[in-house]
Image (cartoon, rainbow, N blue to C red):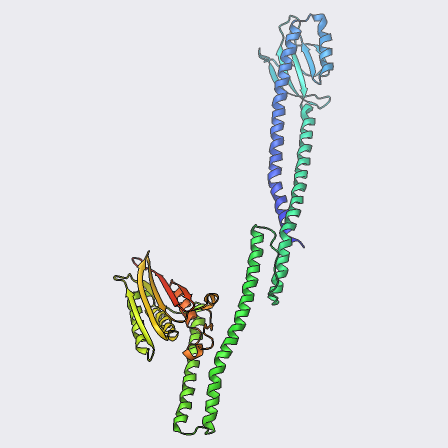
Length: 455
Protein backbone atom coordinates (compact mmCIF):
# COMPACT_ATOMS: atom_id res chain seq x y z
CA UNK A 1 0.00 0.00 0.00
CA UNK A 2 1.33 3.40 -0.98
CA UNK A 3 0.86 5.00 2.42
CA UNK A 4 2.52 8.27 1.38
CA UNK A 5 -0.07 8.70 -1.39
CA UNK A 6 -2.96 8.13 1.02
CA UNK A 7 -1.42 10.43 3.60
CA UNK A 8 -0.82 13.19 1.07
CA UNK A 9 -4.21 12.66 -0.55
CA UNK A 10 -5.99 12.71 2.80
CA UNK A 11 -4.10 15.79 3.93
CA UNK A 12 -4.84 17.68 0.69
CA UNK A 13 -8.50 16.62 0.75
CA UNK A 14 -8.84 17.78 4.33
CA UNK A 15 -7.10 21.03 3.45
CA UNK A 16 -9.48 21.62 0.57
CA UNK A 17 -12.49 20.89 2.74
CA UNK A 18 -11.23 23.21 5.45
CA UNK A 19 -10.58 26.00 2.95
CA UNK A 20 -13.24 25.55 0.25
CA UNK A 21 -16.30 24.83 2.41
CA UNK A 22 -16.07 28.02 4.51
CA UNK A 23 -15.06 29.97 1.40
CA UNK A 24 -18.03 28.65 -0.56
CA UNK A 25 -20.39 29.37 2.33
CA UNK A 26 -19.09 32.93 2.69
CA UNK A 27 -19.30 33.45 -1.09
CA UNK A 28 -22.94 32.31 -1.19
CA UNK A 29 -23.83 34.50 1.77
CA UNK A 30 -22.17 37.53 0.23
CA UNK A 31 -23.92 36.90 -3.09
CA UNK A 32 -27.27 36.38 -1.34
CA UNK A 33 -26.96 39.59 0.64
CA UNK A 34 -25.84 41.47 -2.44
CA UNK A 35 -28.79 40.09 -4.45
CA UNK A 36 -31.26 40.96 -1.71
CA UNK A 37 -29.95 44.52 -1.42
CA UNK A 38 -29.88 44.90 -5.20
CA UNK A 39 -33.46 43.60 -5.45
CA UNK A 40 -34.66 46.17 -2.89
CA UNK A 41 -32.93 49.03 -4.66
CA UNK A 42 -34.14 47.90 -8.08
CA UNK A 43 -37.74 47.50 -6.86
CA UNK A 44 -37.77 50.95 -5.26
CA UNK A 45 -36.21 52.51 -8.34
CA UNK A 46 -38.80 50.87 -10.62
CA UNK A 47 -41.62 52.08 -8.34
CA UNK A 48 -40.27 55.63 -8.55
CA UNK A 49 -40.05 55.44 -12.35
CA UNK A 50 -43.59 54.05 -12.70
CA UNK A 51 -44.90 56.71 -10.29
CA UNK A 52 -43.42 59.41 -12.48
CA UNK A 53 -44.95 57.82 -15.58
CA UNK A 54 -48.41 57.53 -13.97
CA UNK A 55 -48.30 61.14 -12.79
CA UNK A 56 -48.04 62.28 -16.41
CA UNK A 57 -50.71 59.92 -17.83
CA UNK A 58 -54.43 60.46 -18.21
CA UNK A 59 -56.78 58.25 -16.27
CA UNK A 60 -57.89 56.51 -19.47
CA UNK A 61 -54.34 55.36 -20.16
CA UNK A 62 -53.60 54.02 -16.68
CA UNK A 63 -55.04 50.55 -17.29
CA UNK A 64 -53.15 50.19 -20.54
CA UNK A 65 -49.89 51.33 -18.90
CA UNK A 66 -50.22 48.92 -16.00
CA UNK A 67 -50.97 46.02 -18.37
CA UNK A 68 -47.92 46.76 -20.52
CA UNK A 69 -45.64 47.08 -17.45
CA UNK A 70 -46.84 43.74 -16.05
CA UNK A 71 -46.25 42.00 -19.34
CA UNK A 72 -42.72 43.37 -19.74
CA UNK A 73 -41.48 42.44 -16.24
CA UNK A 74 -41.81 39.67 -13.71
CA UNK A 75 -42.96 42.18 -11.15
CA UNK A 76 -46.53 42.72 -9.97
CA UNK A 77 -48.12 46.18 -9.75
CA UNK A 78 -51.05 47.63 -7.77
CA UNK A 79 -52.37 51.18 -8.29
CA UNK A 80 -54.52 52.84 -5.62
CA UNK A 81 -56.77 55.91 -5.76
CA UNK A 82 -56.95 58.48 -2.96
CA UNK A 83 -59.61 56.37 -1.21
CA UNK A 84 -57.14 53.46 -1.15
CA UNK A 85 -59.27 51.55 -3.62
CA UNK A 86 -57.51 49.40 -6.13
CA UNK A 87 -57.67 51.06 -9.52
CA UNK A 88 -55.64 48.39 -11.31
CA UNK A 89 -53.69 45.31 -10.29
CA UNK A 90 -51.72 42.71 -12.23
CA UNK A 91 -52.05 39.65 -9.97
CA UNK A 92 -52.08 40.61 -6.30
CA UNK A 93 -55.52 41.69 -5.08
CA UNK A 94 -55.43 41.11 -1.35
CA UNK A 95 -52.77 43.69 -0.52
CA UNK A 96 -53.82 46.87 1.21
CA UNK A 97 -51.46 49.83 1.77
CA UNK A 98 -50.54 51.06 5.17
CA UNK A 99 -51.54 54.39 6.58
CA UNK A 100 -47.97 55.67 6.92
CA UNK A 101 -46.97 56.10 3.29
CA UNK A 102 -44.50 58.98 3.34
CA UNK A 103 -43.37 61.24 0.56
CA UNK A 104 -40.26 59.07 0.06
CA UNK A 105 -42.32 55.90 -0.16
CA UNK A 106 -42.70 52.64 1.74
CA UNK A 107 -40.88 49.28 1.55
CA UNK A 108 -41.52 45.90 3.09
CA UNK A 109 -42.10 42.20 2.66
CA UNK A 110 -45.40 40.58 1.71
CA UNK A 111 -46.66 37.01 1.38
CA UNK A 112 -49.56 36.44 -0.99
CA UNK A 113 -52.04 34.22 0.91
CA UNK A 114 -53.40 32.76 -2.31
CA UNK A 115 -50.11 31.61 -3.83
CA UNK A 116 -47.86 31.66 -0.73
CA UNK A 117 -45.40 33.66 -2.82
CA UNK A 118 -42.95 35.92 -0.99
CA UNK A 119 -42.50 39.43 -2.32
CA UNK A 120 -40.52 42.50 -1.58
CA UNK A 121 -42.53 45.60 -2.33
CA UNK A 122 -41.96 49.32 -2.66
CA UNK A 123 -44.75 51.88 -2.60
CA UNK A 124 -44.37 55.41 -4.00
CA UNK A 125 -46.94 58.25 -3.82
CA UNK A 126 -48.19 59.54 -7.24
CA UNK A 127 -48.84 63.23 -7.96
CA UNK A 128 -52.15 62.65 -9.76
CA UNK A 129 -55.74 63.51 -8.81
CA UNK A 130 -56.99 60.08 -9.75
CA UNK A 131 -54.06 58.05 -8.34
CA UNK A 132 -52.61 58.22 -4.83
CA UNK A 133 -49.91 55.58 -4.95
CA UNK A 134 -48.32 52.69 -6.88
CA UNK A 135 -46.84 49.54 -5.38
CA UNK A 136 -44.31 47.35 -7.18
CA UNK A 137 -43.87 43.75 -5.96
CA UNK A 138 -40.72 41.78 -6.79
CA UNK A 139 -40.69 38.01 -6.08
CA UNK A 140 -38.08 37.16 -3.45
CA UNK A 141 -36.89 34.15 -5.48
CA UNK A 142 -36.25 36.21 -8.58
CA UNK A 143 -32.48 35.84 -7.91
CA UNK A 144 -32.65 32.18 -6.85
CA UNK A 145 -31.65 30.96 -10.28
CA UNK A 146 -28.47 33.03 -10.13
CA UNK A 147 -27.74 31.71 -6.64
CA UNK A 148 -28.23 28.13 -7.81
CA UNK A 149 -25.97 28.76 -10.78
CA UNK A 150 -23.30 30.21 -8.51
CA UNK A 151 -23.66 27.29 -6.09
CA UNK A 152 -23.30 24.77 -8.91
CA UNK A 153 -20.30 26.64 -10.27
CA UNK A 154 -18.68 26.54 -6.84
CA UNK A 155 -19.32 22.81 -6.48
CA UNK A 156 -17.96 22.07 -9.94
CA UNK A 157 -14.87 24.24 -9.48
CA UNK A 158 -14.21 22.73 -6.04
CA UNK A 159 -14.59 19.19 -7.36
CA UNK A 160 -12.34 19.97 -10.33
CA UNK A 161 -9.71 21.55 -8.09
CA UNK A 162 -9.86 18.55 -5.74
CA UNK A 163 -9.49 16.05 -8.59
CA UNK A 164 -6.64 18.09 -10.04
CA UNK A 165 -4.94 18.22 -6.65
CA UNK A 166 -5.36 14.46 -6.20
CA UNK A 167 -3.86 13.93 -9.64
CA UNK A 168 -0.86 16.06 -8.77
CA UNK A 169 -0.67 14.24 -5.43
CA UNK A 170 -0.56 10.89 -7.22
CA UNK A 171 2.17 12.04 -9.60
CA UNK A 172 4.16 13.71 -6.83
CA UNK A 173 3.82 10.74 -4.47
CA UNK A 174 5.02 8.39 -7.21
CA UNK A 175 8.05 10.59 -7.83
CA UNK A 176 8.67 10.69 -4.09
CA UNK A 177 7.99 7.07 -3.23
CA UNK A 178 9.86 5.46 -6.14
CA UNK A 179 13.29 6.61 -4.90
CA UNK A 180 12.26 5.90 -1.30
CA UNK A 181 11.31 2.35 -2.26
CA UNK A 182 14.66 1.99 -4.02
CA UNK A 183 16.37 3.24 -0.86
CA UNK A 184 14.40 0.74 1.21
CA UNK A 185 15.55 -2.12 -1.02
CA UNK A 186 19.12 -0.83 -0.91
CA UNK A 187 18.99 -0.53 2.89
CA UNK A 188 17.79 -4.14 3.14
CA UNK A 189 20.65 -5.23 0.87
CA UNK A 190 23.09 -3.30 3.05
CA UNK A 191 21.61 -4.94 6.16
CA UNK A 192 22.22 -8.34 4.56
CA UNK A 193 25.85 -7.39 3.97
CA UNK A 194 25.73 -6.44 0.29
CA UNK A 195 27.80 -3.28 0.53
CA UNK A 196 28.00 -2.89 -3.25
CA UNK A 197 24.35 -1.79 -3.34
CA UNK A 198 23.82 1.78 -4.56
CA UNK A 199 20.89 4.13 -5.05
CA UNK A 200 20.73 6.10 -8.30
CA UNK A 201 20.70 9.84 -7.59
CA UNK A 202 18.26 11.49 -10.03
CA UNK A 203 17.43 14.76 -8.27
CA UNK A 204 19.20 17.47 -6.35
CA UNK A 205 16.55 17.96 -3.66
CA UNK A 206 16.35 16.43 -0.19
CA UNK A 207 15.48 12.99 -1.63
CA UNK A 208 18.53 13.13 -3.90
CA UNK A 209 20.64 14.26 -0.95
CA UNK A 210 19.33 11.31 1.09
CA UNK A 211 20.19 8.91 -1.74
CA UNK A 212 23.66 10.41 -1.97
CA UNK A 213 24.07 10.04 1.81
CA UNK A 214 23.03 6.39 1.61
CA UNK A 215 25.65 5.78 -1.07
CA UNK A 216 28.25 7.48 1.10
CA UNK A 217 27.12 5.34 4.04
CA UNK A 218 27.55 2.20 1.91
CA UNK A 219 31.04 3.32 0.95
CA UNK A 220 31.90 4.07 4.57
CA UNK A 221 30.57 0.68 5.66
CA UNK A 222 32.58 -0.95 2.90
CA UNK A 223 35.67 0.93 3.98
CA UNK A 224 34.95 0.06 7.61
CA UNK A 225 34.60 -3.61 6.73
CA UNK A 226 37.88 -3.51 4.87
CA UNK A 227 39.64 -1.64 7.67
CA UNK A 228 38.16 -4.04 10.24
CA UNK A 229 39.45 -7.03 8.31
CA UNK A 230 42.79 -5.33 7.93
CA UNK A 231 42.77 -4.45 11.62
CA UNK A 232 42.14 -8.06 12.69
CA UNK A 233 44.73 -9.24 10.22
CA UNK A 234 47.24 -6.73 11.58
CA UNK A 235 46.45 -7.59 15.19
CA UNK A 236 46.84 -11.31 14.55
CA UNK A 237 50.06 -10.64 12.65
CA UNK A 238 51.42 -8.39 15.39
CA UNK A 239 50.68 -11.00 18.05
CA UNK A 240 51.83 -13.94 15.96
CA UNK A 241 55.42 -12.70 15.68
CA UNK A 242 56.17 -12.23 19.42
CA UNK A 243 54.20 -15.37 20.25
CA UNK A 244 56.28 -17.37 17.77
CA UNK A 245 59.44 -16.01 19.43
CA UNK A 246 58.14 -16.80 22.91
CA UNK A 247 56.99 -20.25 21.86
CA UNK A 248 60.24 -21.06 20.05
CA UNK A 249 62.63 -19.86 22.72
CA UNK A 250 60.57 -21.31 25.59
CA UNK A 251 60.58 -24.65 23.76
CA UNK A 252 64.35 -24.38 23.42
CA UNK A 253 64.70 -23.66 27.14
CA UNK A 254 62.39 -26.51 28.09
CA UNK A 255 64.42 -28.96 26.00
CA UNK A 256 67.82 -27.55 27.03
CA UNK A 257 68.78 -26.58 23.48
CA UNK A 258 71.03 -23.80 24.76
CA UNK A 259 74.77 -24.38 24.68
CA UNK A 260 75.72 -22.42 27.76
CA UNK A 261 74.41 -20.04 30.39
CA UNK A 262 74.96 -16.97 28.19
CA UNK A 263 72.77 -18.40 25.44
CA UNK A 264 70.19 -19.35 28.02
CA UNK A 265 70.13 -15.77 29.26
CA UNK A 266 69.78 -14.57 25.66
CA UNK A 267 66.76 -16.81 25.19
CA UNK A 268 65.23 -15.48 28.41
CA UNK A 269 65.95 -11.90 27.30
CA UNK A 270 64.22 -12.46 23.95
CA UNK A 271 61.18 -13.95 25.69
CA UNK A 272 61.10 -10.99 28.07
CA UNK A 273 61.36 -8.43 25.25
CA UNK A 274 58.65 -10.06 23.15
CA UNK A 275 56.38 -10.29 26.19
CA UNK A 276 56.94 -6.59 26.78
CA UNK A 277 56.13 -5.93 23.12
CA UNK A 278 52.84 -7.81 23.48
CA UNK A 279 52.05 -5.91 26.65
CA UNK A 280 52.71 -2.58 24.95
CA UNK A 281 50.54 -3.64 22.02
CA UNK A 282 47.66 -4.58 24.30
CA UNK A 283 47.99 -1.30 26.20
CA UNK A 284 48.04 0.73 22.97
CA UNK A 285 45.03 -1.12 21.55
CA UNK A 286 43.06 -0.63 24.76
CA UNK A 287 43.99 3.05 24.89
CA UNK A 288 43.10 3.66 21.26
CA UNK A 289 39.80 1.84 21.63
CA UNK A 290 38.80 3.97 24.62
CA UNK A 291 39.74 7.13 22.73
CA UNK A 292 37.60 6.20 19.71
CA UNK A 293 34.65 5.30 21.94
CA UNK A 294 35.02 8.59 23.84
CA UNK A 295 35.55 6.76 27.13
CA UNK A 296 38.99 8.22 27.63
CA UNK A 297 39.39 10.33 30.77
CA UNK A 298 41.35 13.56 30.45
CA UNK A 299 42.42 15.80 33.31
CA UNK A 300 42.19 19.14 31.56
CA UNK A 301 44.03 22.08 33.04
CA UNK A 302 46.02 25.13 32.02
CA UNK A 303 49.25 23.82 30.52
CA UNK A 304 52.31 25.49 29.03
CA UNK A 305 53.11 23.70 25.79
CA UNK A 306 56.75 24.85 25.80
CA UNK A 307 57.40 23.34 29.24
CA UNK A 308 55.82 20.01 28.25
CA UNK A 309 57.79 19.86 24.97
CA UNK A 310 61.11 20.63 26.69
CA UNK A 311 60.47 17.94 29.31
CA UNK A 312 59.71 15.34 26.60
CA UNK A 313 62.81 16.32 24.64
CA UNK A 314 64.98 15.97 27.71
CA UNK A 315 63.74 12.42 28.32
CA UNK A 316 64.26 11.43 24.68
CA UNK A 317 67.71 13.00 24.54
CA UNK A 318 68.90 10.78 27.43
CA UNK A 319 67.65 7.65 25.60
CA UNK A 320 69.84 8.22 22.55
CA UNK A 321 72.74 5.80 22.60
CA UNK A 322 75.00 5.52 19.57
CA UNK A 323 73.22 7.75 17.06
CA UNK A 324 74.84 10.97 15.90
CA UNK A 325 71.79 13.16 16.29
CA UNK A 326 71.78 16.87 17.05
CA UNK A 327 68.80 18.48 18.78
CA UNK A 328 67.76 22.06 17.90
CA UNK A 329 65.20 23.72 20.12
CA UNK A 330 63.40 27.00 19.27
CA UNK A 331 60.89 28.25 21.82
CA UNK A 332 59.42 31.73 21.79
CA UNK A 333 59.13 33.68 25.02
CA UNK A 334 55.81 34.09 26.84
CA UNK A 335 53.98 31.24 25.18
CA UNK A 336 50.27 31.39 26.19
CA UNK A 337 48.76 28.50 28.11
CA UNK A 338 46.40 25.99 26.53
CA UNK A 339 43.71 23.73 28.01
CA UNK A 340 45.02 20.17 27.91
CA UNK A 341 46.03 17.10 29.87
CA UNK A 342 49.73 17.54 30.68
CA UNK A 343 50.46 13.79 30.83
CA UNK A 344 48.78 13.08 27.49
CA UNK A 345 50.36 16.14 25.93
CA UNK A 346 53.77 14.87 26.96
CA UNK A 347 52.83 11.49 25.50
CA UNK A 348 52.19 13.16 22.13
CA UNK A 349 55.62 14.80 22.06
CA UNK A 350 57.31 11.63 23.33
CA UNK A 351 55.80 9.61 20.46
CA UNK A 352 56.72 12.19 17.83
CA UNK A 353 60.26 12.66 19.14
CA UNK A 354 60.79 8.90 19.51
CA UNK A 355 59.69 8.38 15.92
CA UNK A 356 62.11 11.07 14.82
CA UNK A 357 64.95 9.34 16.70
CA UNK A 358 64.03 5.91 15.28
CA UNK A 359 64.05 7.09 11.68
CA UNK A 360 67.08 9.40 11.88
CA UNK A 361 70.47 7.69 11.82
CA UNK A 362 72.71 10.72 11.28
CA UNK A 363 71.25 14.17 11.26
CA UNK A 364 69.22 16.54 13.38
CA UNK A 365 65.88 16.83 15.12
CA UNK A 366 64.24 20.20 15.48
CA UNK A 367 61.69 21.15 18.12
CA UNK A 368 59.89 24.49 17.77
CA UNK A 369 57.15 26.09 19.89
CA UNK A 370 55.50 29.40 18.94
CA UNK A 371 52.23 31.35 19.17
CA UNK A 372 50.34 32.66 16.16
CA UNK A 373 46.84 34.11 15.58
CA UNK A 374 45.35 32.85 18.84
CA UNK A 375 46.93 29.44 18.43
CA UNK A 376 49.86 27.73 20.13
CA UNK A 377 51.84 25.56 17.72
CA UNK A 378 54.47 22.91 18.15
CA UNK A 379 56.68 21.39 15.46
CA UNK A 380 58.81 18.24 15.48
CA UNK A 381 61.05 17.92 12.43
CA UNK A 382 63.73 15.38 11.49
CA UNK A 383 66.17 14.79 8.65
CA UNK A 384 65.30 11.13 8.24
CA UNK A 385 64.44 9.25 5.06
CA UNK A 386 61.07 10.99 4.65
CA UNK A 387 57.79 9.57 3.43
CA UNK A 388 56.51 9.00 -0.08
CA UNK A 389 53.64 11.40 -1.01
CA UNK A 390 51.22 8.55 -1.68
CA UNK A 391 51.78 7.19 1.84
CA UNK A 392 51.16 10.43 3.75
CA UNK A 393 47.33 10.08 3.92
CA UNK A 394 47.68 6.74 5.71
CA UNK A 395 50.37 7.31 8.32
CA UNK A 396 47.80 8.00 11.10
CA UNK A 397 46.03 4.70 10.49
CA UNK A 398 46.46 1.86 12.94
CA UNK A 399 49.37 -0.52 12.25
CA UNK A 400 50.47 1.46 9.21
CA UNK A 401 54.24 1.49 8.85
CA UNK A 402 56.20 3.41 6.25
CA UNK A 403 59.42 1.38 6.46
CA UNK A 404 57.73 -2.01 6.59
CA UNK A 405 60.95 -3.97 6.27
CA UNK A 406 62.66 -2.15 9.14
CA UNK A 407 59.80 -0.91 11.31
CA UNK A 408 59.70 -3.94 13.58
CA UNK A 409 63.35 -3.46 14.40
CA UNK A 410 62.50 -0.01 15.76
CA UNK A 411 60.34 -1.57 18.47
CA UNK A 412 57.10 0.25 17.66
CA UNK A 413 53.62 -1.23 17.66
CA UNK A 414 52.35 0.65 14.62
CA UNK A 415 49.81 2.49 16.79
CA UNK A 416 51.88 5.46 17.94
CA UNK A 417 50.76 7.99 15.31
CA UNK A 418 47.13 6.81 15.53
CA UNK A 419 47.25 7.47 19.27
CA UNK A 420 48.94 10.85 18.69
CA UNK A 421 46.15 11.93 16.33
CA UNK A 422 43.38 10.79 18.68
CA UNK A 423 44.99 12.46 21.71
CA UNK A 424 45.51 15.70 19.77
CA UNK A 425 41.89 15.89 18.63
CA UNK A 426 40.58 14.99 22.10
CA UNK A 427 42.43 18.07 23.38
CA UNK A 428 40.86 20.37 20.74
CA UNK A 429 43.99 20.37 18.58
CA UNK A 430 44.99 19.40 15.05
CA UNK A 431 48.05 17.67 13.62
CA UNK A 432 49.50 18.00 10.12
CA UNK A 433 52.42 16.30 8.44
CA UNK A 434 54.75 17.34 5.65
CA UNK A 435 57.45 15.15 4.20
CA UNK A 436 59.75 14.80 1.24
CA UNK A 437 61.47 11.59 0.34
CA UNK A 438 65.10 11.76 1.43
CA UNK A 439 64.71 15.12 3.20
CA UNK A 440 62.87 14.29 6.41
CA UNK A 441 59.44 14.70 7.96
CA UNK A 442 57.75 17.52 9.89
CA UNK A 443 54.76 17.15 12.23
CA UNK A 444 52.94 20.35 13.25
CA UNK A 445 50.59 20.50 16.24
CA UNK A 446 48.10 23.34 16.71
CA UNK A 447 46.09 24.08 19.88
CA UNK A 448 43.82 27.04 20.67
CA UNK A 449 44.99 29.47 23.34
CA UNK A 450 43.18 29.26 26.67
CA UNK A 451 40.51 31.93 26.99
CA UNK A 452 40.06 33.98 30.10
CA UNK A 453 38.17 32.06 32.76
CA UNK A 454 39.16 28.61 31.50
CA UNK A 455 40.87 26.27 33.89
